[in-house]
Image (cartoon, rainbow, N blue to C red; front, top):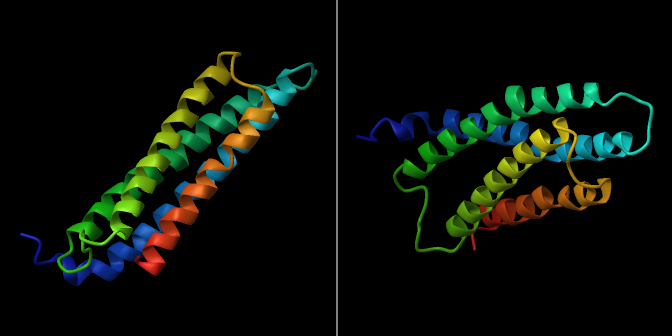
Length: 148
């Protein structure tokens, strides 16, 4: 069933890396937009409509497709025979990190809707949340490269 996977493995891996880079860029940038959005909302005459549009387009046009592409290509890589040994710790750390990234992505989507509706959190909360993808990235990359 998966005899063809080893043949396309390098292409799938390259696509996976590109999808991850795109997804991570969005995960780093969207909370930063939330900071600017929430701070403009709190007593500034500057309109927030442009932030609503930027946040929506970033999430729907870049982040959602990149997350889906990351998951699909990652699952194809995992299905390739001889690539992953689930007896080791690293694939579990990576899987947990990717699930954490996906949960953070969903949290960002919920926060975007709340900000667009005039709600949301203070800028400081979004600044702190902006560190979550960095910590998850460190765990994921370390696990994949070191293979502990």
